[in-house]
Length: 356
Image 1 (cartoon, rainbow, N blue to C red):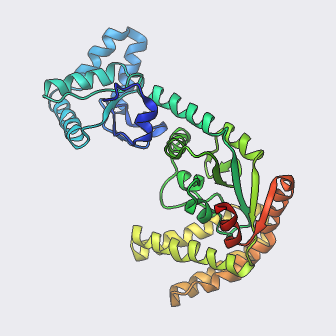
Image 2 (tube, helix red, strand yellow; image 1 turned 180 degrees about the horizontal axis):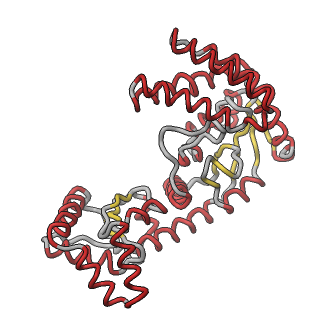
Image 3 (cartoon, helix red, strand yellow; image 1 turned 180 degrees about the vertical axis):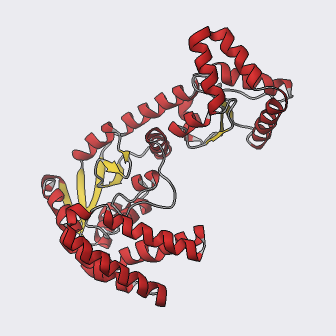
């Protein structure tokens, strides 16, 4: 068995990790296959940390034991035991492979469960993930470009060497890009990316031509630097085909997602708010008059959708938004990369080019 130091093998195999750090630490950065079952909650950890600074390690350790005892101790041991039995090939993990994972391991041993730990803890795994991304980012890349609605993400997802950056970020990159899954912290996003790269270990990467930011997550600098130098293939599909793709994705699927998540009434409110928020986020760039006009058209389209269930009325604001805002902006950005463009064609043409 891995002794807890072959970090790449642990990451690449989705080896289960029982992460005993406090919830705030887990939220700030965690590995994809980790579950959080803390030794101490946030308040307990803060109290122990303050004690450590003022009175030293022995007093802090004693305080930790006094805070986690009796029924509380037993309930946490029970949760760890259940997780260990459900994931017999996993590891315990704390911040640096120090006291918290060793205490957890010792308490489990007293309860009859022998379970290994990650040497160096989350910090060691995190450093391994950073190195993976730095190494994998040196490989050749092909970027898929094209105006909004060109099916770029679909081309990435169906390619054997594709890495769906937007999927990893839980965001589609535009002001309307948020999904119902909240975005992860920056460190967790980078960890997800590293594991995805490590699992495929392709000779060449196929990525979408992204900006520096995807929602609140930014691309690692090493990856971004490589992308700037990479070849670009551009999807050039007819405007009506792009509109249809966007209608299905942003109006049909998003309404279904909100309805499934919140129920019909609350889901409709959340769906309407999502569309209005997306438009509101770019109001200054649109200009207040154009923003007001598109907002009124959006309101009319929502009334029509709620009345009939049909979503074609959204074309009345979506088409001018593409024509007057998104398309000119993307074409301006693409002009600066002209020397990197190696192929242009329809969705099917680009798919065939990538396959060849």
